[in-house]
Image 1 (cartoon, rainbow, N blue to C red):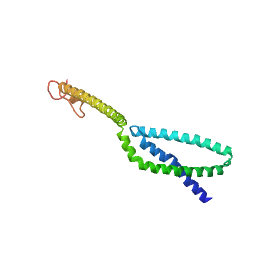
Image 2: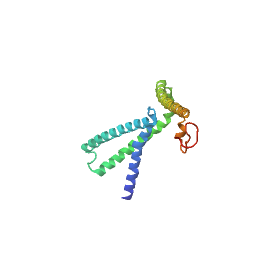
Image 3: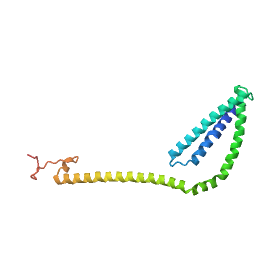
Length: 184
């Protein structure tokens, strides 16, 4: 019982990694989307579609295998059959992934030679950068307008002599005639 539960734990963790995380990583690396959020959304969409296809095809396969009488409708028999099939699928997938690693460099070179895709990616990045630049220009203009307006207000207040009244701690007790003391 202990070895069986340890095997199940190891098996299901490996199955999840092999069936979900590795394809997810592949989808992230091969996504044509621009930006981290768009790449993750694209990869999540693809992995969700893959999981849905796996569940539907796996369910159909279980129904066919059990209806034909090759495997009993027992949970333990289905688990053993699923483990055997997924081990075979895992070996085939590992062989393909090893081949994928060997062809990744030429594939990357081939994709970088595709000028249309490179142009689309570059145009999207340039549009995003131009929008950020325009936003920064607008913020700078608004800050300059505020600064000029404040400068004009301060200049007007200095000319009128009302700025000293607004400053904290100022005791303007002189009259307009220039005398000291209380203004009458």
